[in-house]
Length: 532
Image 1 (cartoon, one colour):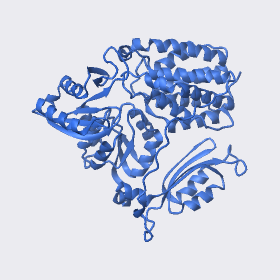
Image 2 (cartoon, one colour):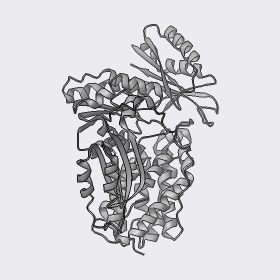
Image 3 (cartoon, helix red, strand yellow):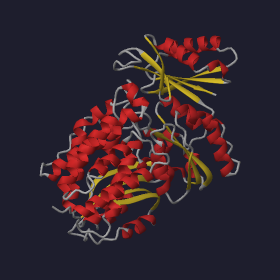
Image 4 (tube, one colour):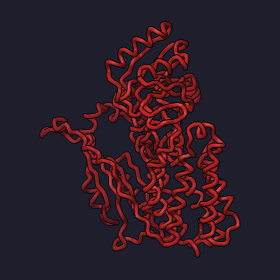
């Protein structure tokens, strides 16, 4: 059996279907027994983004799948997954189809590409599971045999991941990214043997429609900002030849119709985001090439009025812009007050995609954009977006927590040379110690269901029946009294009265420190302590 374009897409869809059925189980393979696991969701949204690709040859299909996954990649596991298929796509260059030798070579290329995507590869993760699985399948005499040996090898490797990472062993779980990849491989094998892949229906609640202030645009208003126009256009064979069509024709025309253009092609689908005064003309013209799958048009005067960003959008391209990531109304407002031009909603359990970063870069419109990911699982995605974006210099400050991001932005000195500024911000972030308190959702060696655990990094430092006791014990373990500033971020589930009383107790216990209480509104974590 040889691998052609149609079969390759079926493999992708089969992998996505199997992962969709097991994504919550993958989420639950979390090193901490709290509801912040999101590996299954990240990997699913990444591979699902590549499942609608198109192409006549294996080369075209693999390239389209790779691009789709890249733009949909979320979290470290999602970015690594996208690079696995990017490596395969590079190996399939010039091929209409692949035999078992070429497929074996493509899988080796996938391993190399995945390791290359991580600046400091860690063994005991998805990388190890992939590498050892591919090694176990080396010398396969057919693609079918490769999948059998690959899956068996990954399964064995996955069971050994706790021996390579103490944090997994302590939590009593295997690596979630490796488990997700194994799940995908099993779904691909099902598709290889003719089992029809069916993606599971999404169970998420539909997003609420944004509230509109109709007074922001009255009968006497003048359309100043135009319309934010977004759509997915499917090229139609009745109008063009999708295989040979040069999408730059559309791109070049759209550039003349507005600004803030985000444009990319995924197979026969073209994604467009543009700010224009005449969306009707844009939509009418684009129907010359295809038909719409989705359309969204919004009056940007309403958006600017609601976001209080009118003056920012009136300026021409500025020297330095700031993009940060946060979850919670309080944190979002604080980052904006500190100078963030765009705050991407995201964090634990909801890692933003590469595309979200690209849209934010476009919105900021600056010569240099500083990016604060504020989550260790988002840094790789931010860097991936930075590599793609060409209209500005993107500098990712590797902030691993919201606390690091907050203190780094507090040290922002935009008049410094960019190299010196980057060093200053990175040093400010490294000087921060962050602790978290959240409710345990399962029993472990360190915690019992329903109690509150306090942890920092990968270390569980305490477990207490009461939430405030967990915070105070965590502060003691982290020697918070030695810090100049203790930032206490109140989560969405923590009462304000409780937080105020807790602030007073921490101030009493740490008299040499300044304890600052902020209504962060963050999910998952009842409290976050950021010490500097």
